[in-house]
Length: 138
Picture (spheres, rainbow, N blue to C red):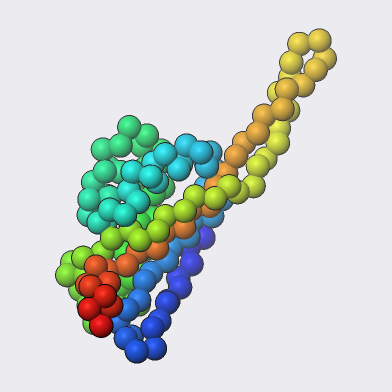
């Protein structure tokens, strides 16, 4: 369900970003994008606080778990750095449409109405502000 990916720079091995992917989340992508837009570009601590007190808790639970997984992935990629000192932020968050299950609901006069149960894929890339500052100075 979640994937780990390193992005290495040959000159600076500490410049790495962590990626976490949630696939086939059983919620509508349009509604998930509304919640994802709230945390895009935010620091990780602030993003988790925003999601904790969000008005759409079902969507926020999925995103907060995904962000925590991205933080853990960043810790695996950068074992020498502390997560607390890393000044992590959400570099990219993308919500793509997933599989749509089509169901029929009975309707009057022998008809059937189509119900579309949508799903989505969410991708989060987490990076450190320290790495970006060192990159711009060099």
